[in-house]
Amino acid sequence: ASRDRIGGNVEVAWAAVREEAMACTRCPLYRCGTQTVFGEGPLGAPLMFVGEQPGDQEDLAGRPFVGPAGQLFDRALGDAGIDRSSAYVTNAVKHFKFERRGKRRIHSKPDAGEIEACRWWIDQERSLLRPQVTVALGATAARSLFGRTVTISALRGQPHQARDGGETWVTVHPSFLLRVRDDKEAEYARFVEDLARIGERVK
Ligand code: URA
Picture: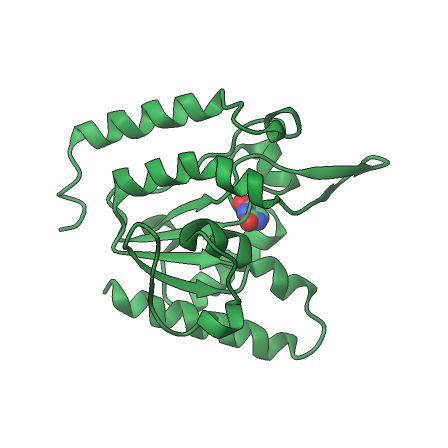
């Protein structure tokens, strides 16, 4: 039913915003990445996932969460009983920020100014889609959605209100699960548990 409330106009508006974002120069990161990586998924999705920024593979593919973190995210979604194609997936920052080391491009964290500049786009995605539930994957997404620095461990496991009033959950970023050394399996299980609980909210 949530799909039905989306008329053709939203699709047109979303496509126009995406098109504009492709030429974004609101912060210096447009000089860094290959292209703007905009969100994707059904515009009537009840669930919106927000990551940090595209990584190396996302920057080349032009799609969010297709690299190693994305593959782990897909697996966790599957284990939580959530079909990724039923959700809208986007990032707080839409250009890849990196440092070059030889041939490799090493991810660097977007700063507060870059997150703030890019809120222009996520705010538009959110007001067009109006998802029932939004999930911040990690601290950058949470900062963008809440407008302040938050501690993931303090906020995970229960719903909160984003600055625009939407029901918002916070959990770890999947790349944390790729990096973590202690209790890797337990951390993964906790992530899946968070996702499963969130999935219940939109059933
Ligand atoms: N990490 C993110 O936060 N977003 C992506 O799209 C890929 C990796």
